[in-house]
Image 1: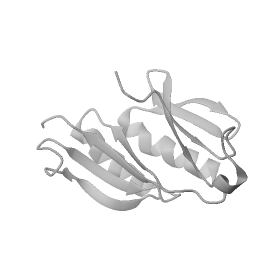
Image 2 (image 1 turned 135 degrees about the horizontal axis):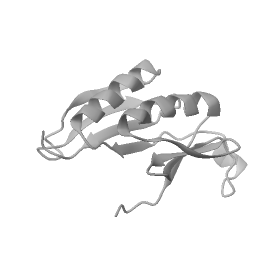
Image 3 (image 1 turned 90 degrees about the horizontal axis):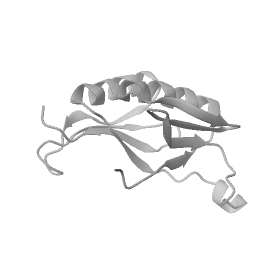
Length: 132
């Protein structure tokens, strides 16, 4: 069982980000599952565990909404081929390269990841921890 139940990223352009993540998460087997106004939950197996939304959320103040603080978020890939497809689709969807697919042995010998910057400057990653 994962430590996290769900997480959210705040975005500046909801429609642009929804289109980006719909494309980028498809190679990982995830899709939009739930939508409330300008908030969309993505996931696998009918469980929305990754959310994007344009504020304000109930816990945010106007000062917090003034700036979107870039965040790092790693998505679990089930295979290295999913990591490769995530990276390719993310670049095609307008993401910026932040580290192509490959082994990151400084984390551990089987850490295979790819890094992309999303439309709001968030560092997103797909990672597979399984040997090839």
